[in-house]
Image 1 (cartoon, rainbow, N blue to C red):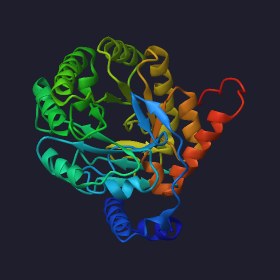
Image 2 (cartoon, rainbow, N blue to C red):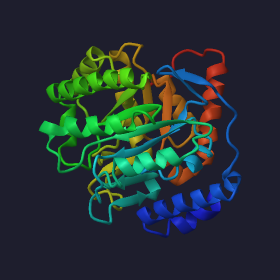
Image 3 (cartoon, helix red, strand yellow):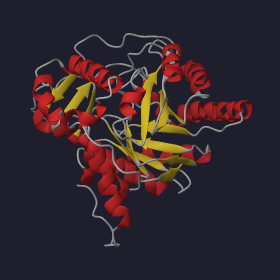
Image 4 (cartoon, rainbow, N blue to C red):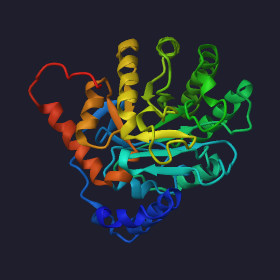
Length: 352
């Protein structure tokens, strides 16, 4: 069904097509027609962060920023759905147009800028959701007008609001679309922010009688020295997991393409190599007790397997859904299943 709709959607502005797709998905789910989009994969139970995932393939943050379509997205067969990024106060994001497709490269550039209705609206949506068949991650950030010097206040507020509702929480310090946000990945700022949030995580765990895993999402544009420093801090602070990676500001993979000059984060096929390299580097620098989620450039089951071979325990898709549709979810689950139960054939060669 998505193959029939895609040509029409691709004639629309990318952000409008995104919004219409979500509305149509929600309407189909409410009417009981969600099955037309494809059959959910058979379970592939995976235990990570102390959580039991129905399968290891998830939806990355950004598609459903306000958590308004949780049940419809879970019905597509994901093992987990990550909503957000959400900020304490509502914000409109950057001026439109702010999302662009690069079809020949199977890529997307976006500069949305954490457009969302605020954490209170997201909490109301989560409380209304039935949440059947998948786990829920909530991705939190800071408002664009909050200086980095006091950013921990925004993150702490969001963490406290979503903590009772989330299966895990992701700290987003790596979006390229909020000015200065990536500076929070610098060693000293990272240590202060994540240290403060780890203390709050433990306090909230004691308060609610339930410890929720906290993950940190990093950028693909970190230097080798930055990766070393980031891994060192996250190891010392004993975070529960790392998501590698967010979108890239590099345009080398799409030079000369239409829209390549647009500002924002590049995702999709061209991100695969860069994000997987960072994933592999983090895996060799973090203890095994800190699992990794691989995201960036997954457009096939083979791509998902490559992420797992590079050290991921879970994977996430987003831009791949734009080009492949919901069938990508099942394809990735089945490819990972085959890898899991296949005889060992030695190490997988590195991504070029």
